[in-house]
Length: 102
Image 1 (cartoon, helix red, strand yellow):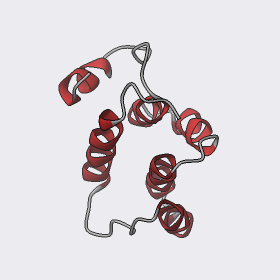
Image 2 (cartoon, one colour; image 1 turned 60 degrees about the vertical axis):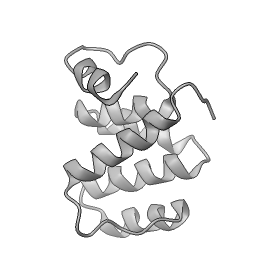
Image 3 (cartoon, helix red, strand yellow; image 1 turned 135 degrees about the vertical axis):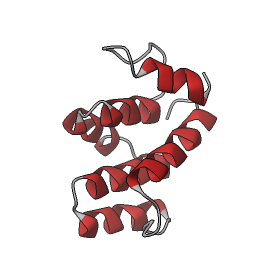
């Protein structure tokens, strides 16, 4: 799957089968299901999940919690990125791992 395929999948009611958990969380986040996206990433122990977790808390306006999760991920709070730009970066990061499960 590439970025364009992932974007196209957002027109569906369900995420495509076989997505890794990071892409699944980002798919649900984009569809407006924050709770489902959050449930997915909070169960994952890796830094990629922590970055997505940070993004989700930034979406809800909880910057303190977002900074905490960025620290856990070893990344900096993206003060100069829009939420859209951050989401796109995270999708590209998750696509690099498609086919690899934690």
